[in-house]
Length: 145
Image 1: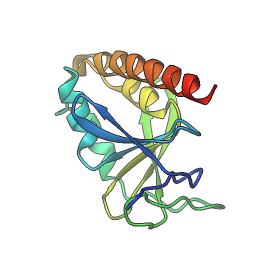
Image 2: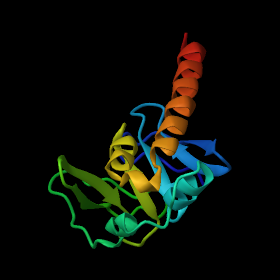
Image 3: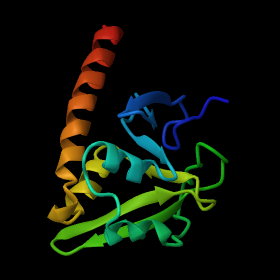
C-alpha cells in the first residue's frame, strides 16, 4: 500500500536515515516518522533518545479546525499537539490518534530537535538531517530538470 502525504495527497517517498525508514514528501518536504522512529533516529545519529523531553508524544492532542490531514498509515484525522520550550515559540505537530507516528512539516523536525536540552546531543541528528536532505533535495532537482 502506497502511503500519501497528509498535506499534499501525493505518494510519499521512503528514505533511509541510518537504517531508519522515513516517509518523505518530495512536494512539501514534510516527513512522517512511524512510532519509535524518532527515538531510533536519535540513537543511530549519536544523540540520546531517553530524555524526558520526548514525553511530548504522549499528549492527547486535539482535532484542528478546518481541513483535516489524515494519517498515512490508518487514514484517521491527525491530532495537533503543542511542544513547549522556554525561549522558543510553541511548535505544533501532527500526531496519529492511534499512535502510528508523527507528521513533520518542512523544517519542523529540525525545530523540534533544536528544543532538546544540549545534553541530548540532538545537534548530531540535525547535522545528519542537513546532510541527508541537502543531498536528497539536490538529487531531486537534478531529476526534474
